[in-house]
Image (tube, rainbow, N blue to C red; front, side, top):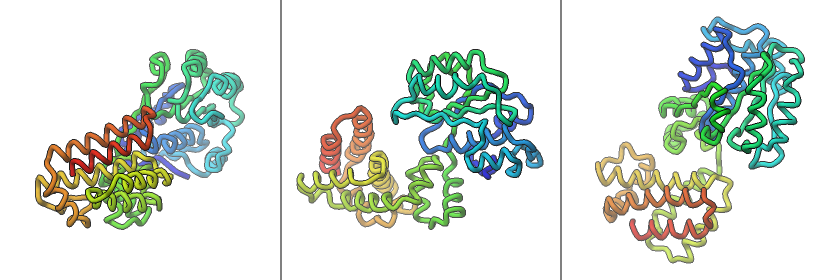
Length: 335
């Protein structure tokens, strides 16, 4: 089963875990804050396994779950009865009944077979205000055997009263060199593809893994680059057709924007340095050189700014086709 040594990067967080486990000073509630796919649930499960382990391994200098005891074996199969994963029927919301039914209603029952009862609330940012207030009742007077782990991609969505009763741990971006080494050594990703995944992941190890394994990502990348190569010669109808094709992929549209942004950062870097060695899309240098030669610095920066604006518009539920059409027309005008 996974151990702390399997967590890539996050040295400060592992130090906190080490201190808590070695000292035995375990708080009743923790918040693990980090962007989507950053590994919050992976960390939470290892910490929960260590909390419940019947004979922890301390030889590594950290109280690691042994992987051999009954509790660890139950954790490995997802059947540890005293580690409860809070679920919710509505995909976008964790409601008050979810918290009352799965935490408040059972927290008073002592652990079945372990020292502690651990609750893991994933996507904590989806808790409604009412759900958070219901959770607050447990956080104010928790049984001594209870540990609650709230995993969130937006710590600011949690009430100040929740934050004040929890230890907050923040996931940090993992160094590019560590992400690349992991992709190449563990997933056997070739050097060039690893560089591309690292550039898009921006320190998010889970996203890097997803991109490396995604066939959609490779196809979207190729189609996005083809669009950028020939956008100046395209009619509006062709641009609209390209927009509709974007919507067919399972990949997050923000990943599509990131592909465009990396391309134009390459253009900007080449225009400034005339050096292709540090470009992400260096195999496309022929086209990058053309765009760099005919574009102004202001035009390239306008495109990069427009990409961020398009992300914000889609987050605010502005019409997808309209947002993409405005973006691609801006690209056409400035490149």
